[in-house]
Image (cartoon, rainbow, N blue to C red; front, side, top):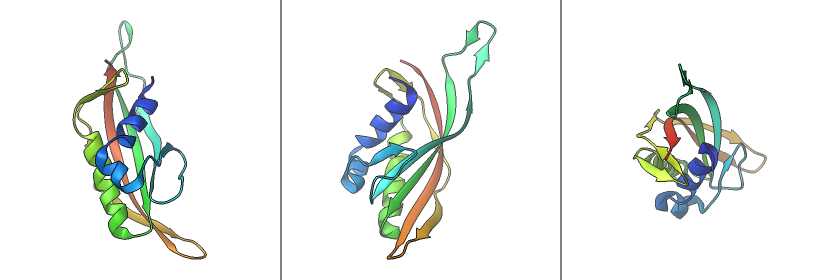
Length: 128
């Protein structure tokens, strides 16, 4: 399994995330409300003299979407909590992550306002 699949699985199975959004956690898309969409926004393939090193870094943007501000905030808090501790998931060892404070965003649709809390997660990982 690669980092993206493992990170999605990690967030999707975290109890506080499941309680709010079920399993609606996807890369690059929003599947209804409430939901989490993930995007890799930066990173590099770190190398040393012998080639690619095992420890890698990726900055992942997590957008937490909901019908209410309180629910979007709770979902963002749950996603951050899911990503901070060290853990091995599906053959990927995630080291301690860091996160920015979630930004308040959103969008007006024809019928309602959709709240979005956006945070950047610095994910540090390697094969287990």
